[in-house]
Image (cartoon, rainbow, N blue to C red; front, side):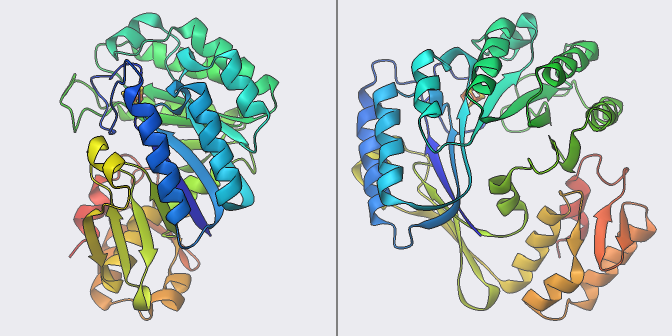
Amino acid sequence: MRGLYIHIPFCNNLCPYCHFYSVVDNDGSLQEKYIFALIKEMQMLENKVFDTIYIGGGTPSALNILLLEKLINAIDSNIIYKGSEFSIEANPESVTDDFISLIHNSKISRVSLGVQSFFDDVLKLLGRIHSGKQAEKAAYKILNINKDLNMDIIYDIPYTDNLKSMKTLKKVIDINPSHISAYSYDAEDTGYLKGFNNDDTLFLEIEEFCETHGFYKYETSNFAKAGKESIHNSLYWQGEEYTGLGVSAYSMVYIDKNMRKRYNHGNNIEKYIINPEHIENIEIISSEDALIEDIIFGLRMKKGVNLANLEKKFGKIDKNLLNKIEENINNGLLVREGQCIKTTKRGSLGLEWLSCSLLP
Ligand code: SF4
């Protein structure tokens, strides 16, 4: 399986807690040049066959509608898409009738909507520019054109009553999307509202509520109805190859003997526009490190990782690593089921311990 990620680095407003690369392009002068560069990069791809496509950001729905149409047409004519899943991210304030009509008439199969909360005071605290009402309307508009809908929410937000997170989740479930992403508020990179959250009880409450309403937890922050798990995001967690187009987008390709190469275009839109082939941050990942990465990312998924499959791919697993896994089983953070290892309920509460305990 191979995934194509396309980064749209434009937002109508920059939220103070956000760590993604994005710019506000008030006069629209960068957008056209950027889409031109993006299409050029797409045309230069050596391998144009992909199972999944994901247009993320930033805010893809904030793009001028004619440019978004141009991009979708370019994908149609340059990419051989195998039809597994084609997603686009959107924010409620930019889900216009034109956006809906464009998505309706395209091969896009799934829209991921940044709801975050239905409470206007919480949205304001997060620096979001939409209202709860707008989020609700946008969700119904997407459902009306029969696209799969993911709704992103944030919980454990500092200075916010946890009850508001639960009420937001209940409303999401009433709207009835096919997928819910519930992220714990994270101020790690930006420092905004740092140090006031971390409520494991709330996480367990969210998990239980989703599962009793038919949303199966298949990854640490993701819940889906049966068969509606995100195929594209699962590629990242399962160590599959992906190509990232656009500024700040990462690619990962296999090279010889399970070694991998990961790289991106850096975080400077002007540089990217001048040369969309420009590459920065090249990292060669040895086979040993790739194995550890596959275990760490794989354990984000509820089904865990199959050690026998990893041995087929990487050869015999080193004794030291097996000992570390055993130690975590004894400490009640992991559990073994047949050939698979999985996190226990306690182990799934914040996965920082994983890298600390498995990395050499
Ligand atoms: S809209 Fe999304 S991508 Fe843009 S700044 Fe806010 S959180 Fe970041």
